[in-house]
Length: 121
Image 1 (cartoon, one colour):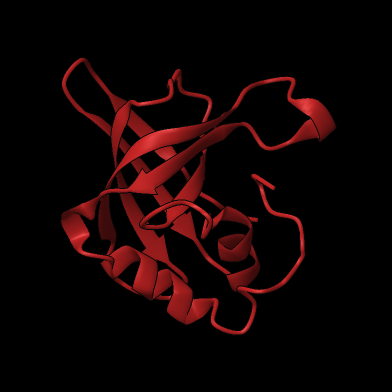
Image 2 (tube, rainbow, N blue to C red):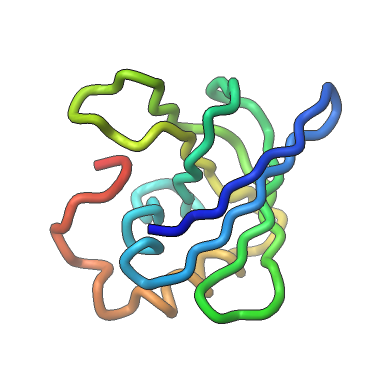
């Protein structure tokens, strides 16, 4: 899975950039059980529940990045059981009025009901 996540953090703004190149990686990262939807972002940054983040997401072959404001609702730390991917789950804010969720679910329409494991469950 190529999730080219990079970080730019300072006291006022926390920005993550994420590139998801294939549908399997998108499925593993998407968090449909979160209100407004959410996305797992691999990162070694120091984030806590409730932190507000801004994610620039590039989906599959789309040329533009999708800006997503969100809040950390999931943290997978180093040493997590089952060698889980280290990172955070971001709950999408109401700001984009469901655009990020709709675009992701468009790509995952055929696999949303799958029972394949993801980064979070």
